Image (cartoon, rainbow, N blue to C red):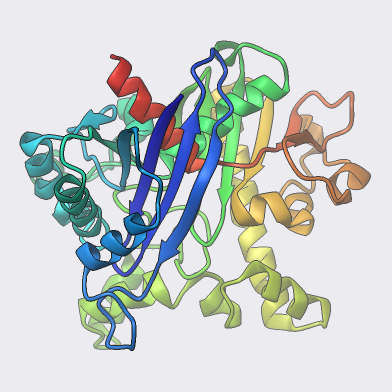
Length: 380
């Protein structure tokens, strides 16, 4: 049995999960403990002053005897990291160099690594990168059509995110269909407050909707997703908005919250049910964007075996699943209404039994994927 602590350190929170992983060909991990410490650095009673205090509080109540390793979620690995990495001073320095690509995420991820190294000396630490799964993107999919020298100088490249989720969900989809991963082409739809689509060809990412940052692609809770870049210039030149305000607008005041005033899909669906026109429009915009990516990635893959919904919205919003794939029956894509609406949980198929393309719902488990990759690094 291997005990692994998974840490996901954000700018103002620390999420953790302690897992026991049996030594078997197909281990099913046991969750020993999990939790979150929030409001780091806030001027509020009881709020931790910094990540060191937050992580110390989290670790104090955990049974860490015999801890095998610590796996850290790191958002951006750039072009440097194509796989998880055993943490040492060189790896820490390399992650720090990537801060300009993820200024809101990598500093917090680094803080978690540094604090964990200090609090747990001698325990191997492994960095697992959101971007690594997408390093298999072909050049035509990862290259933006801008001046090549400028792109090279400033690292402008499609990196993609949610890699740990797309990786585990595509594997679990193949297992659900009882087919070898190498033979299955899947479009995975990670729909949460953040959302992304990925075309997975035989277990390899070949296209993904997020790009240089997590802003591109699908409509999200607070992020706009795809838009005409000229909108930024227009807001700056005509509206007089500074770049910092535009950044905040597109990342925090757009998407569902910008269109309808709520970023939670449950609240949006409740408002839509009452006839709220803003909620109805936001829902249509959200689902239309998903549908357009499904069509594009079907064309990219050439042959499609499955479409899989995952994450909070993907797993729990039947209305989104049905609307996002509506009208695609000529492509062999169809949702069975009874299966889709059934109050089941766990991995399942929601398309008709004879559908050419299986539509699936598969719960994601990014913490387990991080733990699995962490143990893989130690085994290697």
